[in-house]
Image (cartoon, rainbow, N blue to C red; front, side, top):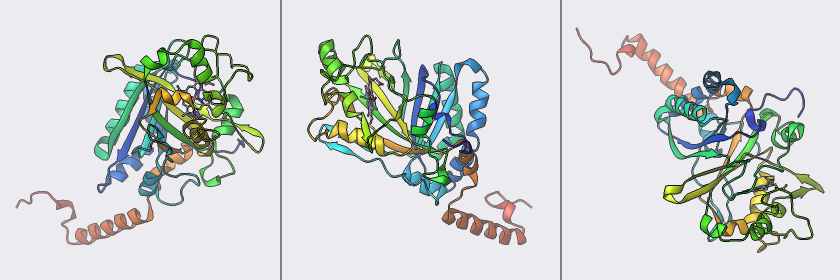
Length: 347
Ligand code: HEM
């Protein structure tokens, strides 16, 4: 990432113990887009205010916008690779697209901070948004996910993490930004736990206790680790994952929230295709025999600099209608009735 790249959001922050994932749709009613645009300028201050109450707990918040929402909220120009979530697979084994205009990925080492920030954010947004999915995630013991394996081992770190996730000269108007794909998976944990540890290890491609990768001589080509290892022009392409376990034992709900960041959606989509369709087709990821994706969304994550500018990015059509209403106001103002709109008039 060149030195002059605008400051990214907290995409490359290290693993946290807790997270809240919120996906919301934006109301298309008049005036609601203005609320969301103005909220973009408040995000950094809200994170600072809540984070300062426990500075060692590493609170962060990443905010992303879906393809349709970008057009409605901010208009042109738009991020080069932003498009609606692409579906893969068929029947029971399908990566489905579900509604979502805004993603909030809130992380900290303590859930109370995540909770407080989520509440403050949603208070500001009010009825301009409807939350369509909210997941409170945690890491299991030594950073394991719900299927009991350590998750995140092969994530790139340091400069490499930024190189794989942060946009640079490839889309200069959106440099410092990133793309994120989320999928909420529910597991059939009874069936998964019915497998032997050795069978589970062959499905993931790593040893369960030690987290060591299986030797190529015994690792199946349909293992999760094989199918999500991809190359472009002979070089491995990585993504950055911050998956979390979640669930409600009383409701027999056991899940993994998948969240992957990259500088274009392409590598994540390639991995999903390998998992759901198979590489070659039919040689699919057996983790999907025990896991079902119930949501799917793709979002663009602007740099912090761009996030601060978004309140002023009014799309042309909206700007025209605001100008028109201002003109009407000033016409009414000359008749001296503008300030009395909607209020009872007394002698
Ligand atoms: C049911 C949901 C999922 C679970 C429980 C899961 C779990 C895991 C585990 C345990 C590992 C091995 C340790 C590690 O390197 O992190 C892993 C690796 C990986 N997963 Fe997933 N994963 C899930 C979904 C996905 C999805 C949807 C993608 C991408 C579309 C993905 C991409 C990757 C990648 C890139 C690796 C590293 C592969 C390597 O370099 O060896 N995972 N995952």
